[in-house]
Amino acid sequence: MNRIALTTGSSRRLGFEVAGQLAARDDTVIVTSRSERAAASAAKKIGSAAVAHVLDTWDAASISNIAGWITRELLRLDVLVNNAGILLDEAERILSTTADVFETTMRTNALGPLLMTQAAAPLLRRSTAARVVNVSSGAGQISSMTSYAPAYSISKAALNATTVMLASALPFARVNCVDPGWVRTDMGGPNATRSVEEGADTIVWLATLPANGPSGGFFHDRTRIDWYPTP
Ligand SMILES: NC(=O)c1ccc[n+]([C@@H]2O[C@H](COP(=O)([O-])OP(=O)(O)OC[C@H]3O[C@@H](n4cnc5c(N)ncnc54)[C@H](OP(=O)(O)O)[C@@H]3O)[C@@H](O)[C@H]2O)c1
Image: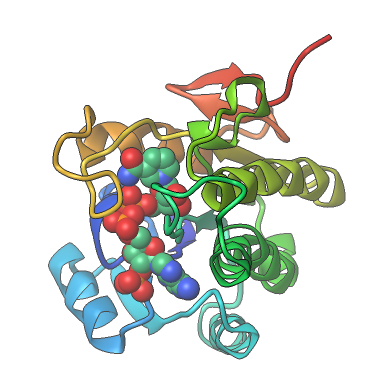
């Protein structure tokens, strides 16, 4: 199937790898970045299957702009991968994290994917195989949450909860979230245990699920995991 797939934050690292893997499956990929130049350069590297568009998921006008462009130029969307994310408070603790860091992190990691999915919903409705993948983190698992990166961890738990609600609101789609593991990216650093290829694997698997695939789940290595304490 020739899908039309948008990955947020796809000019580098994990997002770029996801876009590249989807393009290798003959999908049309929309490569996005906050920088127009970075998006164009990444799309050029991927090849003719890729089109570039600027997108800042923090900015509602930017989200509305790309949704309008897809409506006019491509008419539908099959896959939305909400990959863009920030980690600002790795060294912080819950009692000292600042309002600014907390708000910025929640807006980027939790509200951004929600606004993107709301804007994409009419386009996804036109697809016969709509898939939404929210790139979360093991840090968002309430069942194993510690003191690590409070704003980041809470934002990813919020993203997991958002995924459950979106799965229910979009019954025609498969909506899931994923922990890619510790990946060698700008965020993960050079000592991370996984390559971007390994990190992208479950994301692409969820983006290309069959019609009877799961929805509303949290996945790691293609396996469903719990993200909240089970009784
Ligand atoms: N690396 C890991 O070990 C790891 C582990 C668990 C989960 N994750 C998750 O995986 C995802 C990708 O992370 P990564 O490791 O590839 O991080 P990264 O190397 O820091 O890249 C972050 C990406 O997010 C984009 N981004 C950030 N803020 C944005 C905004 N407001 N609007 C649009 N794009 C924005 C950046 O795009 P531009 O700067 O080009 O605009 C960039 O492409 C994140 O959601 C992260 O939480 C990563």
